[in-house]
Length: 141
Image (cartoon, rainbow, N blue to C red; front, side, top):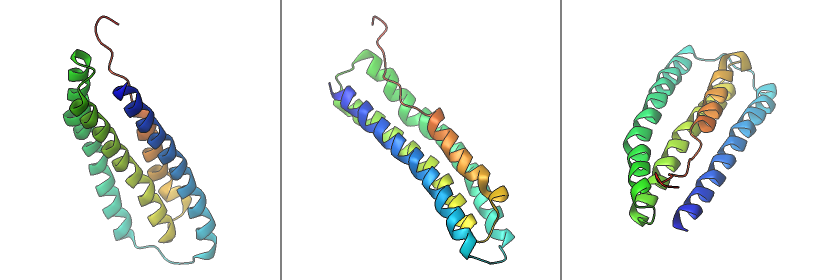
């Protein structure tokens, strides 16, 4: 029962974050019409480097928090500490993915075109989809 509530919460957060990235793109497009600035290329390069590091961090978080918790939950699905660790791993993973979408919005507000920032929005969105929560299944079920 504890695992079912955790999966439901994680999926709700995932859906909310997917919607928020689409919202960032829409808000960025509305604000870009009113802003007229020359963008700083340094900001773009810095956020690009940080974004690449964030994608690597998502892999590390998944391997160090989520996958070991899933393995232990296969053996003992009623362990509330492991369920909390599994849930926390996914929520932290989703926060890292969400930052990519926020970077797209920041760059759009800094004056970059949609052609420059679409990768940030799409990257965050696709990573959120890629890291969909899966319920750990026991070997016998």
